[in-house]
Length: 611
Image (spheres, rainbow, N blue to C red):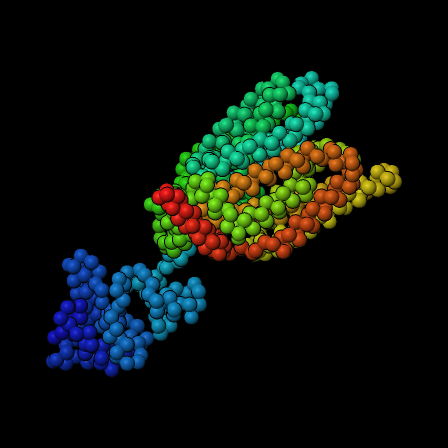
């Protein structure tokens, strides 16, 4: 009989077992001389033996197996023709995989309940009788993404020490009674702003490094140089050398900053991107807090510099164990390496092919040609890309003149000028802690609240708090200190609230710099933005003393408050919401224009070559 060899090539699928009326009720038909009863074990053993003999899993319909084995037969109702449908090509009935009908039934029955039979019953694994786990195919592994976040956080911790260092060492270096190195007023201004001037040139160098070598290699080059510059600063005996080393650490920090943040953006899964990027940003603020805490211990500016040098060397070892960004690899035509890198970060069981397809689709067929400087600038001339870069540059420059850059560079002098009741160095630690607390709040709400609402609300509160400080200084300068003596806590409270909300809102700007630019243009675009940002920081620090002389201290802080409100307005009117979307989805519309621009430029180049 054909029915007792259900997996033979000569067997008809519409066997007596599958068509018998009792088979649909989950009981085998009565045995007879024509159709002797065969146990489930015999049939399954026969199936497995034949499958092993063929060296591959059998490609037969699950309905035949169910009807013979008697398992879950009550779920099949309706015409027998439905049971005769062959399995789709490439599907294995006893292999862990999910068919279209299974996915549909699972979505109807509720997420997270596991694959289901069309009748609503849970499907069971044939050997273990347990629910088949499909979650590993749907959810990426986060362990290695978290490890990468820790390594990138250590690099940002080192960058935070660069920009926090002058804020606590300036008073010692400008003390006329010091027995160590002394800086006059002009030298002190250069000392405070030289890192930002180095950042201007470093961002230009970083454009080449990020395009040619990628984020990871750029960090491996920058960190040792930074540590060496710190050591030279520590042992310097002249103001010229100490200013020069501030220039060098600013130069290396300027291309390490976007390298670390871009790497984190590009390797993170879209569901984790806001959280992991926030962790990296928090570490940069923690670096500033670390310098403030060390400065509070009265170790001196030389020992504080040694601590900064040690911090710069810590993440180097971890970088050797991480792969390059898969998106950067695709832009250089190294697709095989990109697939291995994506597997490294997502896990072997995760289906990353759709993500890789989206990356390669956006980068296009001319990835390597787009890495040249001419091609990059041709792409930037596309109208939507130009608008995006212009908005990002404008809002980034506004952040420079919102007061935070000046506050970091002159933390202790500003607190001393405001007659804060508490010790200025302890107050600096409180301000640094407020900034870190703000970035922690940013971590908790950035993916829930969204980028745009977070930016608007945070900078609105920043403007109000810094305006309160301006009002305090105005009353003190125009009516006398006795009018504000009883509220001497206001300057410190205003500054803590201000830096807290900059910690909440400013990381959004850094996120958008990486999210709104297409993969092909991200390295060059972010580098150009950072060039202007560091130039703006240098200008803001250099002009603080001049603005204070012209407008008064109260007028300067009111100016900063107005800039904060302007940032909130620009964010409301010009920035899109990017939360919960992949990088390719965010830049999808821009990519269409980019591809047209690239194709036109290539056609033009071909025509010129022929001529």
